[in-house]
Length: 113
Image (tube, rainbow, N blue to C red; front, side, top):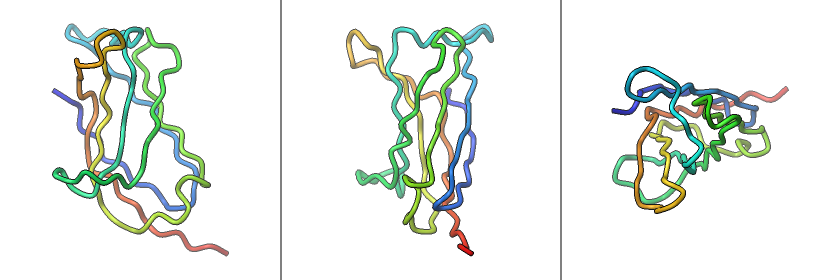
């Protein structure tokens, strides 16, 4: 079962968050044999993407998945609420997917001054 975590991002600003994922037994999930993928979509049935989260693993054995978005990537995003998920995909077969994190993704407007 995926962990639920809601995110709020101010459009045009940097955003960083580290997820610590665990496997059964509560130990860090070893991400060494997995690719990581994550996107924001308008709704569950949508095929369109609002934002590619480009998640990455720092040290794969630590179970850490990082989202590190620069303001240049979030500039121009419309104020909205969508949904996101982060999945890991088996590197060898590319057909085994595990959803690690999911939730609402809120994009708030930014006042520039």
